[in-house]
Image 1 (cartoon, helix red, strand yellow):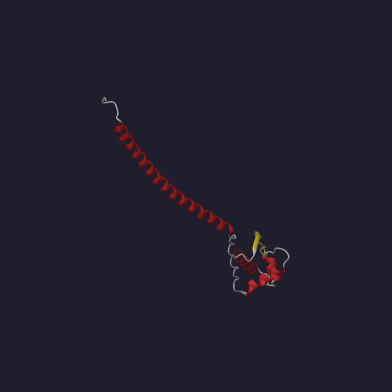
Image 2 (cartoon, rainbow, N blue to C red):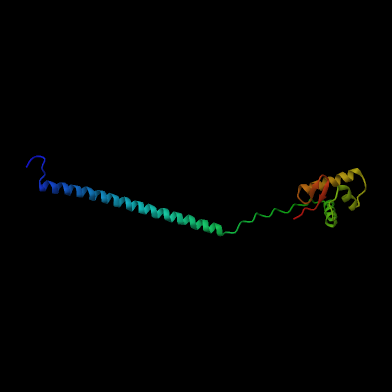
Length: 140
C-alpha cells in the first residue's frame, strides 16, 4: 500500500468519526427544535390571551359619560322669579320683557340688574343666550 491509499480500517474509522459528527449535529438540532417549539408554544399562548382580552373588551358595553351635575341656581328669590317667567314663556326673552313679566319697577338699573342675572344664569347653563341679549331655556 502506498501512503495515499486508505485501508479498510482507516475508512471505517473515518466513517465512525463522521457518524459521530452527524449525530452531534443532529442532537444539537433536536435541542434547538425543542427550544423553538417551547418558544412557539409561549407565543401561541400569549396570542390567545390577547385574542381573549380583545374579545372580552369588545363585549363590554360602551361606558356612558357621567351626567354633568345640575347647575346650581343662585340662592336669591329673583332667580326663581326669572325661571318662573321662562317656564311660562313660549319664545326667547330679553331683559326688558323678563323685567316686565316679573312686574318690577321700570328703571334702567332694574333692567341692568335683570340682564346681569340672566347672564349669570346663562354662564351656569341654566339659560341659553341664543343671540346677544336674547335668552331662553336650553333645549335638552
